Each structure stands twice: as C-alpha cells, then as structure tokens.
Image (tube, rainbow, N blue to C red; front, side):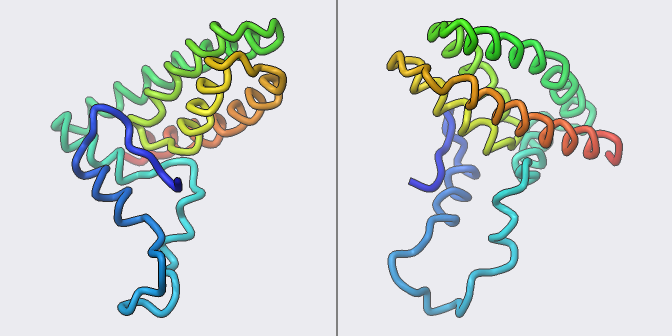
Length: 155
C-alpha cells in the first residue's frame, strides 16, 4: 500500500491516489519516472489545498482553516507528547486521530500518515515507541507549519 484516501472519499483525491500507484510492469508511455514524482516527500500536497479552496469557494476561507489548524495543532502535539510519556494509549489515539484528520484535509499527507499509524498502534495498545513516533510527528508538523505559513503569506 503506497497511499490512502481519507473518508469521506473525495473523487478527485481517489483519482489522484490511483494515478500515483506504481504500475506492475513498465508503462509503455513513459521511459522514466517524471520529476514531479519526486515531490511526494514534500510536507504539503498543494493540490489538496487548491481543491479545498474550490470546495470552500474562496482563499479567505482556506486561510481561516489553516489558521485554526496552526492554532490548535501545537496543543494536540503537547497532548500527544504527554500521553506518550505516560504510556496513555487512549490519549495517544484521540490526539493522533484529530491531527490525522485535520492534516489530511490540508494536504499534509506524511503527517497524517504518521498519525494514522500511531492511532492504529495505540488502539492495539502498542505504545512502547510512542515517544520517538511523537518526536517524528513534531518534526513533520514544523515542516507543514512552514509550508502553510508560506502559502498563507503568498496568497
């Protein structure tokens, strides 16, 4: 599994995920992977932000959503950190779930995927490496934060 689509399923995101799937054999129409494929490791998938703007109708609404995310996520990361230190699987699950959903909505795929994994592990009670996972999520958030602030400043 190389990707996922969050619920509720958005047809454009589903199409994008399917198009990004690696073919089982060589594709006749391409000799090599395109340079655009190397951008998958960026902190933000800006196409998700563009689609959000289309759905909300204007850039100001997207800026408000971004501002809310940037205001609320540090507190959720603190809750994640505290739950990791205490070995509190339920606290980890709740905070990871919230960050997972909001970051996916803004195109922060790596952050969302990391939260999804932490949520899955905490649901199973496997929280032994939670502090290291939370530290990695905090680093991903910093990258996302920078990207969103740059997008907000330029738009």
